[in-house]
Amino acid sequence: MKLLSRPEKVLLVALIIYSFIPAFGGLFRILELAGGPALGLPENPRAQTAPVTIAMHILSSAVFCVAGALQFLPSLRRTGTHRVIGRAVAASGCLSAATGLWMTHFFSFPAELQGSLLYGVRIILGLSMIGLIAWAVMAIRSHNHLQHGASMLRAYAIGQGASTQAFIGIGWMIVTGIEPQGPLRDGLMVFSWAFNLLAAEWLIRKFLRRGAHRNSVSRAGTVTLRIN
Image 1 (cartoon, rainbow, N blue to C red):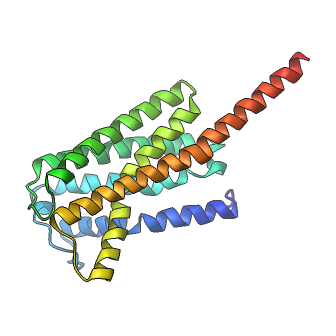
Image 2: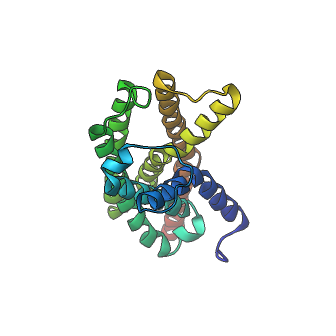
Image 3: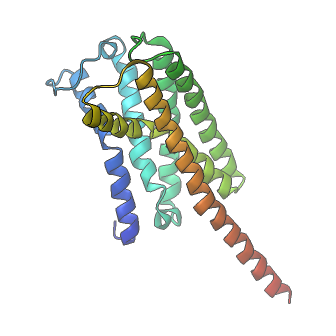
């Protein structure tokens, strides 16, 4: 942490706090599945039918969201730490998406928890997340840093959907006193992913593309000076 600037520390803490509800709530679920004490989490009958798959999904999602937060820090991107953590983030992201796809397709959800809209969006985004991570890996091997960063940021936005869904769902219950279910729940969850992806596109345009443009201009200026 001594290598990080103050704004970077604030950003890192904010992202970890944002990931807290799904990441640590999931870890509590794993403790219950492992035979630990009941921690007051809502009952999930599907957890008993495929505990290994659920545990893999929870752990990989937690690693992707929490370790992925480190990849936003410019200080770490200038060191080998970014590359080492990036490999773990890419692998955990693919595992999170793959297990999420498996559960979406094979679990039997009641209509109030997953309708056709949510099912379709989950399938599309799960496949997209794997594709974006694969594209990011190919991009960095070709030294295309802009495409690498943009693809990973989009994948991170998809992976962080559970965090946004948790905040929106809790906010809805506080305001209305009713837990969203059925089409309303589907709509709020889809809206959460849409919000994250729009935020990712804004960040890509504001920081990644501008940064890449400044670097290209700087390199062009350096080359011109050398020629002159």
